[in-house]
Amino acid sequence: MGEKTSNISIRIPDEYRKRLQIQADKKGVSFNAHILRVLEIHLMSCGFGPTSLTSASGRLFQVRCEAYLDNVDETTWAFFIDEPKYEKERAYYFIGIGRTILRDWQVTDKSTVSKEIGLALLNFYNRKGLEIDRLTWNQYPGPDNDGRRVLQVAEVPETFTEFLDLLMADKWTDKFVNQDERSQDIRRGRQESSLYR
Image (cartoon, rainbow, N blue to C red; front, side):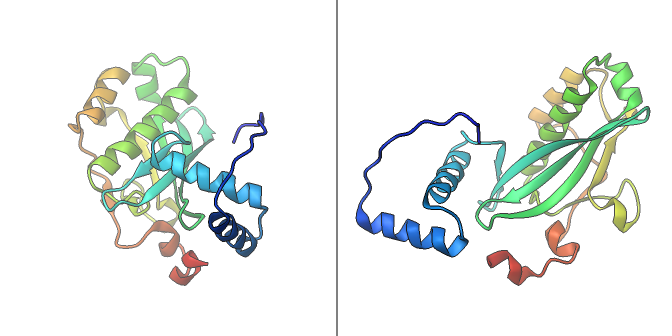
């Protein structure tokens, strides 16, 4: 949500106003905050909101990004997968690019390129029919690495553009990706019943 706001007046039927007020009270938020959240979810489902994905099963996810690691070995972003319907974070992944790729691609803005690749990969997996909150990679063993993926030079073509083209055409293969039966938050211990609160 941007900081700049505008005051507008809107007329809605009393029945809608009452329902929205009940929902806002139930969630413990103001009427205005609830209206803005309903609008944001609608805009996301139409493709106009923050980065969003609709899975093959019709579930809507919002993706939040945060720079995570930038060192001599890799540049990695954290990608948080939220399900707006339940207002819950369902998964978070660390997706990065190894330094050799960045050097070979002659990348000057490592951070932006890494973020764009991460988002492109999430869209690629989603188009392949994988549920975006159930991804796992077996690149690095152990439970602490559930959700960690770092691209290495042998997996990608010679240029950044060629790689994006392969992803867009669904012609790339990720030999490390799998889909678990459960979303990552459930694998990490969240009770399924807490999703619906």
